[in-house]
Image (tube, rainbow, N blue to C red; front, side, top):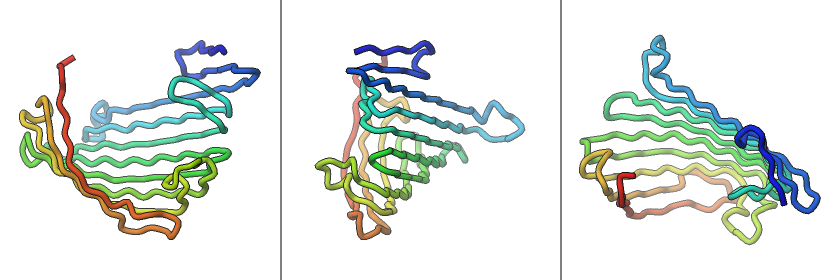
Length: 193
């Protein structure tokens, strides 16, 4: 087995048992604050990735030709309110096409308390690569809404947090299941490194 990259991984090539497969990835990011004429902070990010059937790298075993594209917009509207929109597209030669788009809003009531709500629309047109997963074998469209309430003492730099979340399906095709759920969780930072 061998791998070759002459440009720090932008274009990579693998050869395994006679398979010659390539992958390309491009990432772009724009800090809107660097354009004072726009008069707003925020960021726009995008990625484009293409992998050939048989391409192999850590975490990227590819058994089909695969194209992926994504775009995200993050806008702090006020000191307390932030909006995030994103869209992703995946098109596989075997697994078919899937598209998703979501819009999220996060509001900080205080430095320690924040709530967020979001809506996500997803569409899948093929489930050929789903294997034994009943969930991944679902096709059609579904729209979900979610809400989360979080507490982090010390604000963004606090060492731990707890949260509660709920999600419900608003609309779905017959080929998709409801995605209703609720839960609680948290995190703890072990070090500042």
